[in-house]
Image (cartoon, rainbow, N blue to C red; front, side, top):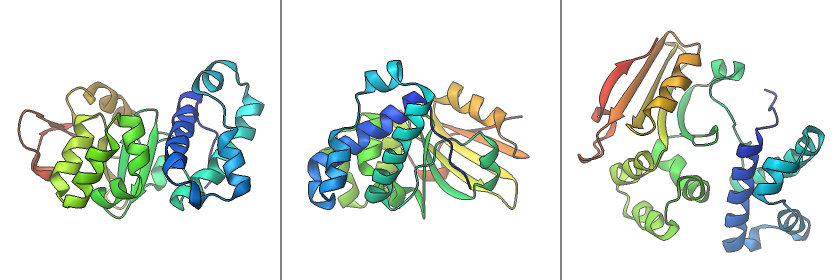
Length: 206
């Protein structure tokens, strides 16, 4: 499946996450990759000054570094044509970033630097929650900070997104664009303890 060059905003977010990860994990980068990280442009430059050919070239470096960090390609969008191939568990994050995994807790653990960066979560607080193994605390925190829990069943042509009330307008817009026959949102009341998929008011989206 071809991966398109992401928007400037997404590119800038990916770069910020790579830089944050690099600070604490320099030993996992060889000399060549370290140089790539250190030469990545600033958010302002990416968003305001880069043209399309330069963005395409930059994305080659970003993809390479991302795979070095996570072992996976960066997934960018959940509402384009490639969405029909999605199946399973995902986190949808601000900036059109989507990460996949075996389950939502494990995916959060494997992509903790990215989540902390995009959702403005204190990494030490998040690490303590991950170590505690409290799945509901971890997932509830992510949702409260703007992350969206997504479950796609390709066979059933269905998608469910669990979201906070603040993110609901954005989630509604995403669901309306998706091709799936069954599209549901579960809007979570953050004033109550998070309790998995049972949390939230279910809304059918057409």
